[in-house]
Image 1 (spheres, rainbow, N blue to C red):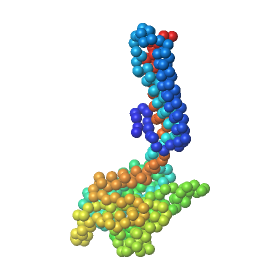
Image 2: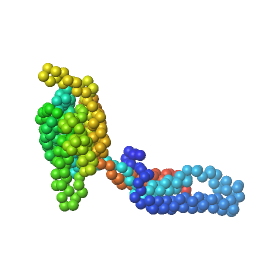
Image 3: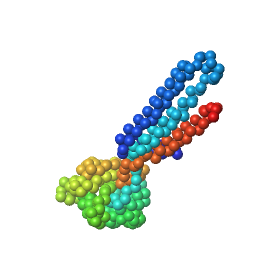
Image 4: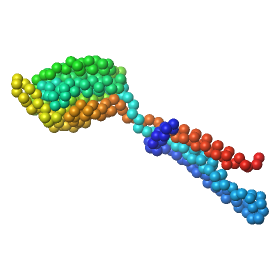
Length: 336
C-alpha cells in the first residue's frame, strides 16, 4: 500500500524481524497506563464519598483523554516496525544487460496484411522499442532471411540500431537457427568484455520476430536448426522471447503469382519454450507494440528488494505529532 506524502507501507520482507520484540514495550506501557487509571479510580472511591466526588468534579472526564496515549503507542509501534526493516519489490533500470533484436526479413514479411507491410511495421515497432529501452542496456541487431547479417553489435548507443532498422532488405528463405546462433555469438563477445576482471556476466536476452517457421534447414533439429539454437541459448542462460507477427490472410506476389503466407506461431512457441523465454503473437501494429512493451518490462528493468521503512517512520512522526496536539487540546483545562 502506498499513501500520498507517506510512501510505501508494507508488512512483508522484514530484514530484522527480531526487532518486533520491541513491540512489547508500547504494549506494556498501555497496560501500565490502564492499571494506573484503574488504581486512580479505586483511590478516589476509597477516600471520598459519591456526593463529595460529584462536587469536586461535576463534569465527568471525557473518554478522549485516553486518545493521546493510545496514539502515542501506535506511533511507537510504527517506529518499531520501521526498525524491523520492511522491504518492498521495486523496479529499477537494468545496467550492462545485453539485448539482441533478431528480425526476419524473408519474402513473406512483404505481405501487406499488416499495412504497409509486415516488415515495415516490424521496423517501426522495433525502433520504438529501441528508443524506449533503458539507456544502460547494450542493444544489438541481427536480420535474417536465407542469409544472416549482424547489423549492430551490442552497444548502449541505441541510435545505431534505430538507423540500421531503416536499412533492412528482403531476402529469400528463413534461417532462424543460424540467426539465433549469430546473436548468441555476439552476446558472448560483449559479455566477455563486460565481465572482465571477474565481474558478473551481464544478463542477456534475444528478442526474435518472425511470421513463421524456418525453412533453412528444413528440420529445426538439425545442428544449425532453430530448435538446436534454442537449446544452445538455454544452456548459455540466454532466454529467447519470440514474437509471431502477421495474420492468417497474408499473401505475397512473386513473378505474377499470389502466394499465401499465413503466420504460424507453432515453431516460434517451441523456440521460446526450449530457450526459457516467453512467446507472443501480434496481428497488427498495436498488438506488436504491446508485445514489445511486455519484453521491454522484462529486459529493461529488474525487480529488487528495496527498503520500505521510510513510510513507517513518516507515519510514526505524523501520529506522534497528532497525539501531542490532541493531548494539549484535551488537557487544556487541567490546572497547573
